[in-house]
Length: 219
Ligand code: GAR
Image 1 (cartoon, rainbow, N blue to C red):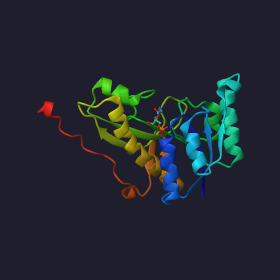
Image 2: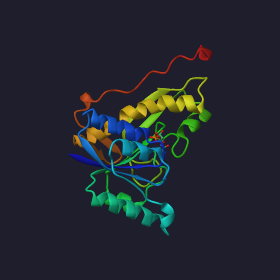
Image 3: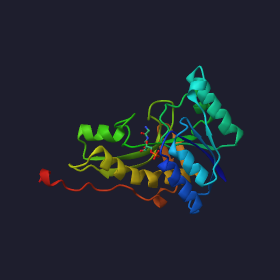
C-alpha cells in the first residue's frame, strides 16, 4: 500500500481531502506522518483527530535551508514514505528533499500553471483580469511551481469575485483533483515523459473542465 508523507504550513484542507478519500476507501494509501514548519498549523489538529503521527520541524533550528530539508527527507525516509504531498506548504522545496524523492513529490497550486505561480495565485488571477482560472497538481522539480503537470481543473472567474470567493471556488476543485492525482499515482498510472505526465488508461479519468458563465457585461 502507498505510504504518504504530508508537508503543510496551515489550514490543511487539502490534507483533509486526502484523509477523507482514504477513510472512504476511494484511495488505497496510508498517511505515515504530517510534518509542519508551523507549530500552530490547523493541519496538526486534523492529524490528531485522525490518529495520524505529526511532527513540527522548526526551520529556525537549522543554520542552512538545505539542512532543514535534509532533516525532513530523513524523517520521511525513516518511515518508508513513497510519495510526498505538499498541502499548503509555503516553502520552496530544496535539493536534499527533491533528490531523496525524485518524481515522488506532488504540490497543489491555486491557479492554472504556468500562469500565476508563487504566492496568492488567486489574487494574481483577479488582478490580471482573466475569465478562467483554476488549480493544478504537479510534480515538484525544484523551481517555483514549475514541475510536470498532472491534473488541472478550470474554474470561472466572475466580475463580482473577490479573492475570498474565487479562492473558495478554486478550493472546492483542489479537494477533487488532489486526491485524484494521488489515486492515479497509487495505481501506477502516471508516467513522466520529459515535461509531460502521461496518464495511462486516460478514459477513466473524470474531466474537471467547467465552462465559464457568460458575463452580462460582455453581452
Ligand atoms: C491551497 O489553496 C493551496 O493551493 C495553496 O495554499 C492553500 C492551502 O490550503 N498553495 C499554494 O499557494 C502553494 N503555492 P489548505 O492548507 O487548506 O490545503
